[in-house]
Image 1: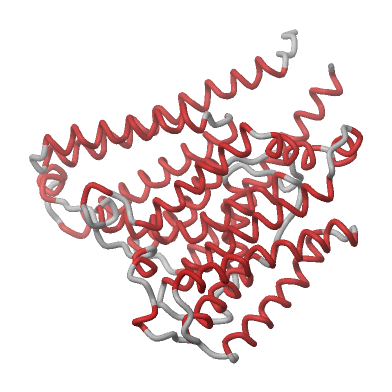
Image 2: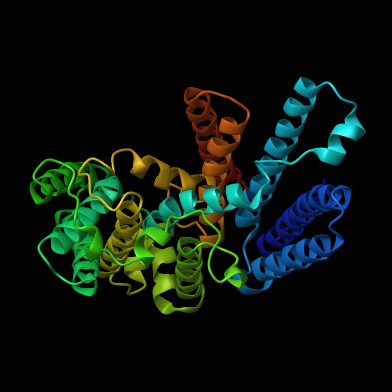
Length: 407
């Protein structure tokens, strides 16, 4: 019989396997992009695409240093994007009637276009920013069902302060403080009342919805256009950024910077270790001298801060605040973390996985639109992926428990 591998060796083996999967997915992605650019006679863009892909891969490996669980969603994102790109090609080829190579030389993919790429980025950025806070919460063994309405409340406060004549700085600060306040309330209730986070945040979800309706007067609040800074609508604008060398929309850059900061906090700070410890085993963490209630309060307050930033994105969509705009967003936020490898049992999750999970949900929605699939199909596909992610997480936990018992 083959002896069980030690835990560090097993992790290194899993990491090596997932790295190979990501490498082959990126190679296939590069071949598809480069092949299309070659057929259209743009070799310089081929070189740029290869260089950019290599830089992104090195960033993922060297800066984030993701665990094996985070590389799986990243590989899945690449493969799903390839699937929809190929699906668009074959659907158009079948309806065109020309030969394969003749059609391939003139085919211009709308799914693979820069405009659609920017659209996916800005759509997923709203969810990704809020999901960063949810990553903290889920790693710590909690859940937050109020995040969607907290975002709507922050957007309502922003619109309200702009409407009464406050400057953009004060209004944005008020929105961020509101977000922090919603998280602080959640953290205090959970840590002091010792109530299950699911129940507490289910109640505060309705509480924040009611507050948002009070702030907006139960209708859509539209502040004067001249009171809104130009950079706020640009957060969710899919148009080419100016100057062009920026490459990505402003909202995507903000999400990436926040992701990098959170990744550093989780990996290199004592607080990050405490978050993982509390989520892995709260009783053990308490015996080790960790102030568990304080960690929970800080985690939920930071999650509220990310929800407040997400409220800026929510407001930027139409420069208005609707008290019900956050309904359903909490499901997408939780889905992004779970699809990204976060464990609802706590103790596991990653920033890179969360970003990949947010990207997967919007690539699926966008790709289904290009293939002419109805919205219910999109919901079914995402639901199936969430169930599969939770099932895989449960299977891994069972296998880990069995391995520890065998040793």
